Image 1 (cartoon, rainbow, N blue to C red):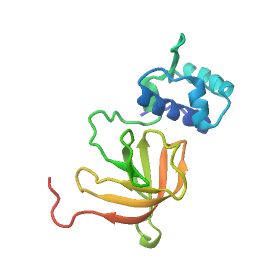
Image 2: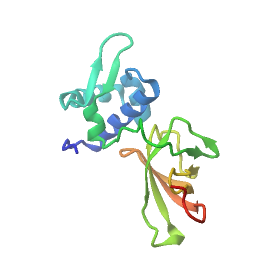
Image 3: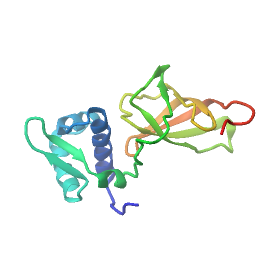
Image 4: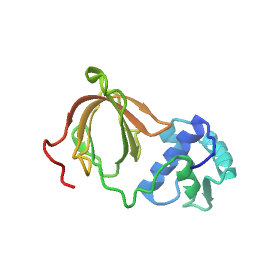
Length: 177
């Protein structure tokens, strides 16, 4: 477990760097990060200097250069290596999102079924999700749980979608395990 304390701004920038790096698998330009987090490219360059000092980011020189997250960055963001993880699908307004993978589902208020919420932590960018969108998560590998909800908000810093749950489905009977 990492003991690096990041500011919300640093965490947000680092999370977008990780998301963009996963999509492209090559160095990410500061301007691309600036677009995603709605900040000035100069601000991103300044933040990258402090993230480099913390050994969370590595600079790549040259015309194809930019920034890459280090292994320490994944630890600092508490991102697990999902290469061997089971695929939990995600659909956005009915369209499957192939480059997003659900990392964690947190049912935050099951004791109030009429106002049940879920926090969905994703790998992949959450920039294109907006309040009121319909989100379908699952089925999960073991229990085959599927959650259908309406996007209520986003936590950009932690890469989470906050849903009001409209429906949850799991097959009745014994799970296949």
